[in-house]
Length: 508
Picture 1 (cartoon, rainbow, N blue to C red):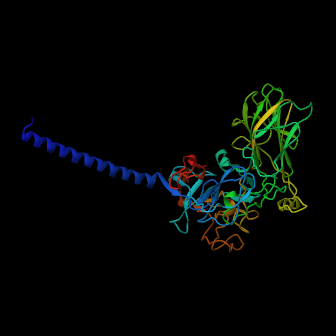
Picture 2: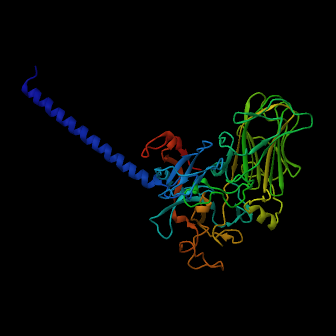
């Protein structure tokens, strides 16, 4: 048994250790806070998306719906409330009322790499955070589209720079595709007209189609896409944003979209099978021909009957499913199988990503105007685009068909900076930005100068933005790179205060 002096010494030792442990813990906490503040100030900072100007890439305050007909889930901007206007499913066009008592979610929370642009040049298509030049305490988020010294003009929904179309990076383009129709979400309502019309050689197969036997020699078995509006009438594909439909937005879209992507999963049953995809945009016709592996036929891309890219031999594996992606976007034709570009020889110039480009044929103003008119009883507008898929030579199965459209940058201000007919030239250290939700984005197109050097009056319908409609380099905060706190999804029955892990994603 220890003596009293020994016990007193042990107690003093424990008190000293406890005091040292407390001080060490306090020191660790202080250091952690200091490092966190340094990290926040100089490396990464969190921001909340306040509005829907970047939807559907990034959500502001919004609600999430699952279509009562086809089951497709989509977000609708709330802007603080959801009114009595119907929302329209972007996949099947079903109009539906906002369920009573639904509560909106807050906007996505993102991480931003601060001071990145002190060490690296901003890149086109980056999603950037910047300070409002007139109110530096306000942070905005938009997509960077034009760099210092460039002249920007929006033409038929595309970005042109110095008179040439700007091709998006792969990651930016993937973020900007918007659904038109996906057969994996088939409507169940009576009277709904199927979008894909198959000839009698095809059989329905779950979410896709099956061609159990080879078509007769010289014949192609076709699937033809017919687009319809919310009233069920044949119509052109338009720039409809489901995200805007719940807050006094259009439920149909106004501008005709011809930049489209078709993705599908196909299984060639024999080496004789050949998949053919044909598209038309205005006066230009495109044809993608993909034979099965083992075939001596080359894989080819045609423009108006002329071969513009090819690869020797077939590219579709026999006996297993392959993901096929074809697209006409930004005056370039894309062909990928299982995520890989497959053409090896090209006869037209290429984009930086390796897609073959073309110069579109001229389109008359009469055709443009007629195509943009809405259908009415007894009259259907001329179709600005066509799409069909066919098979010849052997049996083949299609698991699904999904059609997407590209973002359409509208000339919302009349006239606006950089809009069609009003090109805008940037000076040194100036950047031009646009929102992905083009009809609802307040961005460089509409920022009104106090003194206008372009010779036309500023727009009266938008708040005044003193100075040039650009972001000076000194106002750049950083690059958005990760959604770390997405709103909880209703389909997961997660409380609103809990992040939805299925929504964690990189920002492109």
